[in-house]
Length: 580
Ligand SMILES: Nc1nc2c(c(=O)[nH]1)N[C@H]1C(S)=C(S)[C@@H](COP(=O)(O)OP(=O)(O)OC[C@H]3O[C@@H](n4cnc5c(=O)[nH]c(N)nc54)[C@H](O)[C@@H]3O)O[C@H]1N2
Ligand SMILES: Nc1nc2c(c(=O)[nH]1)N[C@H]1C(S)=C(S)[C@@H](COP(=O)(O)OP(=O)(O)OC[C@H]3O[C@@H](n4cnc5c(=O)[nH]c(N)nc54)[C@H](O)[C@@H]3O)O[C@H]1N2
Ligand code: SF4
Ligand SMILES: [Mo]
Image (cartoon, rainbow, N blue to C red; front, side, top):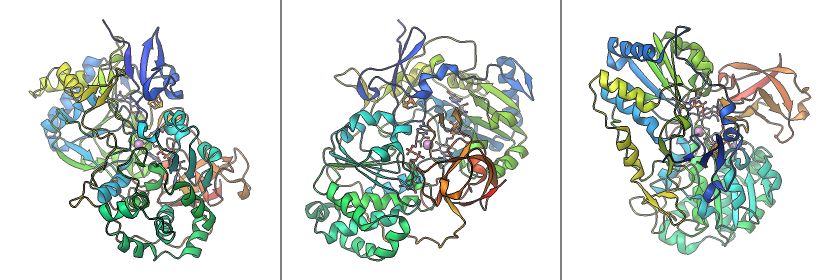
């Protein structure tokens, strides 16, 4: 019998369970999904998708499209084929394409547009990235949301945090900031100073968790010296934090069960790894690791404790400043690089020079517009898959709900190509079972990934000596020009990056005297974009906000890499605003 159970495929912390019932998407009642879905899934089947394959603007059949694909791959030097895969669908079978391209001898990508800088900081300090899962956050007394916007990006945490003390550190007065016991409206890209000062004041106040630090962080004294390099008064004034805020944070957190819940906001900078590591160090000074209801949550590694059944060893180039023009054929899957990669103008120039651009996706967007060959994908309701999450330990089986004539699944596309190119591929069911075998069934009937620690770091860190490795130096910020704004490119409530309803505004504090709907030019060293204004006093006067997915936002961003972690840095550039 067909199972009505599946899960949301989107790149989102929550990885909700879904029941497909009477042609409707309904949420799982139990577990982390808690009986509700978000706007993306509530309206999923209303979004127009690509129905027919196209070549050079003409509709063709799927058979012709596959033949064309085969011809392209036959005619190219294999190293001149690039496979660029994004995170439009987060499920595990998406990677079956890597298997084909890697075996063929094509080039794949490495690096990330997302969370890599923060993850690098975590690994440097702790020796691994083991995440504090949702059900541990539920057991805390105090939550610090540090550069995370839960109402928009991870709403299933909200039912778990009722009656807890909430502290928010965010340059924007987000919904969670409005509800919080304390909101520190910090200047963007200055979190490292706050984190250093917090560790310093924990020590000054004699509140250091001596027992923990002695055992697992014996270099704290050296770190304390580093924190003394921060001038207190001048720094606090500059970053928009008061001594009172620091006192309040400490009062709320010392000797409490504290979860520090971080998002990508803090690390969209070149030194993002150091920012994350300094926040971890504050948690270390309070002794927050290895205890129930305590810890630091970030984007965990969704593939932790899983092994890939696919061939993935390949020549790889960076996903951040990819030189598309060095390839003859670029195969783009589950991604919209022309909107979501940094430095759009560069991406556009480079993609235009590639002889053949193939787009394999669900929706029309900037990238489908310039592609030579367009292959529609199947939605998650039309194919079998399985997924994990970067915020909880669930393993969600995604059963196919119905047959459809539209599109082709990743597995079927690869099965065709593997056959044509004599590459070994196991049956689809083999791979699905492979992934499923990493799960164990819990009493409530849900699957969880086996061998993930519920409370990580109970016996110290995963560094060579089990001790936390503190930051030894940090970069001081450059001086800035008065007429420049910090740019924040946070996630929008109505889109999932560039999927669904994309925003089209620049948000700015009303002190600057712009009119709502007035067109302005926003420019950076990198490029410019014209957008309509929305006055928004949730923002600091020195900061503007353009949501991720807004057409043109990445004209402003540069394709520099983070110092550590091979990550894009979407908020490094300052911007100017002028009347159009
Ligand atoms: N609705 C929706 N949900 C999504 C997504 C989406 O596009 N839409 N995208 C998904 C993806 S791909 C990801 S990676 C996650 C990310 O989810 P989040 O981690 O929540 O990411 P952001 O919204 O980018 O940033 C979070 C917060 O960081 C703040 N921030 C920005 N700069 C700074 C700073 O310098 N310091 C501090 N302290 N805060 C700062 C922003 O104001 C914002 O409120 O969300 C996922 N979920
Ligand atoms: N300025 C700025 N830029 C950013 C960010 C930011 O915060 N600010 N965020 C960055 C982050 S965190 C991320 S993760 C990236 C995301 O960037 P991308 O990975 O490019 O993600 P999307 O924009 O969601 O585009 C995904 C595409 O996947 C396709 N798709 C969906 N489902 C399927 C499927 O089942 N199969 C196939 N084959 N295709 C499918 C859809 O057609 C969709 O257009 O963007 C990054 N870009
Ligand atoms: S909250 Fe996240 S996982 Fe849940 S339905 Fe929405 S996008 Fe999907
Ligand atoms: Mo992301």
